[in-house]
Amino acid sequence: MKNETVVHRLDVKVGTRTNVWVDRWEAYFNTEEEGHDGFVVYVADKSGWDNLYLYGWAGDGDVTPAWPGLSVKGTEVINGVTYKYFDMGKSLDGYEGLNLIFNNVDVQVDGPAVTLNRNFYFRITDKGFEEIDPEASYCIYVDDQSGWEDLALYISGAGDNNEDWPGLEPAGTKEINGVVYKYFETDVELMNQSLKLTFNNNKKEDDPGLVLSFVKNITFSRDFYFSITPEKCEEIDPANHGTRYSLYVEDNTGWNALALYSYGDVELGGGWPGIQVSETKEINGTTYKCFHLTPACTNKNINLIFNNNNGGSQLNDYNLTIDRDYYLRISEAGCSEIKDCTVYVQDNSGWDALALYGWGDAAIGDSWPGIQVTGTREINGVTYKYFDLSEHVGKYSNLIFNNNGGGQQIEDGGLYTALIGDIYFSITATSYEKLPKP
Image 1 (spheres, helix red, strand yellow):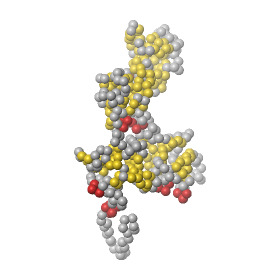
Image 2 (cartoon, rainbow, N blue to C red):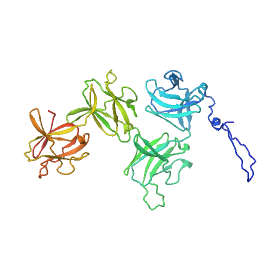
Image 3 (cartoon, rainbow, N blue to C red):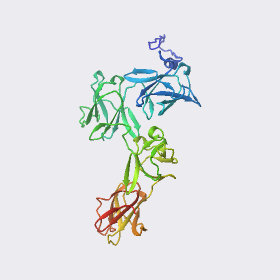
Image 4 (cartoon, helix red, strand yellow):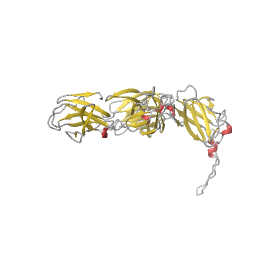
């Protein structure tokens, strides 16, 4: 009987060899659960949606009922986790290549292609899914920037489940949104208990080395994520933790609204028309509409589609790998990256020569006094000396105008400048003024 001990005794003697075959071993365990119609898809639903449906397709047609698919059949608690479940129907037993889509009618998360020869367990958010083991406990993830030689986790407050000091060592590493976490696996018995976590540098109590630690109290009802630095330990949201970049857009489309959709490694906004403008920012006299991207986009290759927020107008796709901030210029003709930076100087210093040095994200010139004037240009009747800084576009630098190392310079305290587009200054021998674009 299933779930009961099966004993088969063999009369095996010393000096003999006995081969044992077990037929249909997988079929014994991959069987349907009593009380369900066919195999079951269990979903730990973290999407935040009001309703959840499961659609399945293969080839060109529906396998489940037509969109949005199956409704939730019920809920079931397994090891303290509440799952919504879908009975797939006995007629689909053994079905190969079934593509699953979790959805709320309007928004969808594409799931895997499966063969229905067992039950499946998934955890979903409104951004993605992962298959999980219902017999496994939650994990504790650590972005370890402590500088410690080693990391361990001592768990207390769990009765007989206490670990001996200094506790668990990491089970492995996992990369999430560009951040590599160390993670600790725990016993199922710890789920939903009140625990005290002591992160430490794995020094034994009798070790002469210094014991360094941070303590956190939790109710272990989910996965936990922490960041540890030499100064502190804090809980973090992995969706917003890590390196993030922004897109700065000079919008010349004339549209009343602007949204940004993408496809590829990341789908911005989870669907059309994408995400809205995060803020507007004036940089060097130009107003940029800013899209601040989440760490989930970092180092991902995506195809951008700027549109007028589903108003019927859109630009052609523009491909980027999100490995830095980008400055873009858009018009109804398309999208292009702003790759130029020129510093124009109305020079009233009276110096015999002019040079420009900079330090910070961008070093202007290999050494003091920096670079020489690129040339002169007349704009609206005014003659400017200019420096071409296009090789540093998008970076920041502290600029110091000087008389080419002759002993005079304008202090750099107020000249911390974003190197993008055209930048205009007026200088004297002792002061500067940042000018509007002519």
